[in-house]
Amino acid sequence: MTDVAALSALLSRVDAVIVDLDGTMVDTMGDFNEALNRMLRELGLPAIGVQDIEHMVGKGSEHLLRSVLKHVLSPVDSAESAIKTEALYPSAWASYQRHYLDINGQYAQVYAGVPEGLRAMRAAGLRLACLTNKPTDFAVPLLTSKGLASCFEKVFGGDSFERKKPDPLPLLKTCEALGTAPGRTLMLGDSSNDAQAARAAGCPVVLVTYGYNHGQPARKVDADGFVDSFVQLARVSS
Image (cartoon, rainbow, N blue to C red):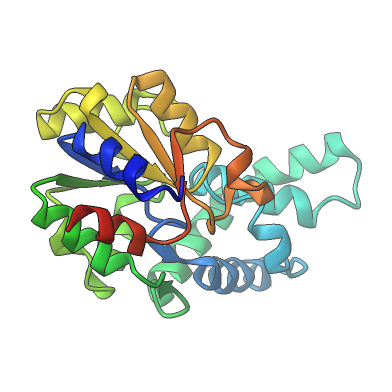
């Protein structure tokens, strides 16, 4: 959706917007790359490239770590790789958490137009919540360091609820916390996880076209619209 009128009409039908974090508001690939490779060095494992990491991001840190371990252990047979992955996981998680907290936000950049888009939506009377599969202890400091935390009434991470996106539960719980109906609460994300969760929860969904989406084009995902920049949201919200 690049049609200003269509986007404006969609926003006029909602009371709140739930916004994803990684790949939607902030390009955190540099943080992932640095923290994961510090972890791998600490464990004596081979490094991994950004081009591989970007396909693994979006389903939570647990999924990311297991995917990375399976990738670097791929020379062994699949059964042995699975066993080694689970054996290494506890120490990998402890190492990754320590390294990520050390560098959180240092290798990340806010996408152009995001602050303006958030401010415009708030000025238009829309209530905002951030919902990410990133652990809350990673998400809140990142939003704060990038000057975005004050835009949100609520911030929920991948550990806030029993299940993560693409399950609809986090969206339904976020709507409940905001006191808004799912049908009048827009999900704004970058991936099929966001879109699937929104569809199942009964929320309309718009995707940005520049995010990660597991290495697949966002425009191939079933969504109600697409934006190339938060600047478009600022224009129709003002």
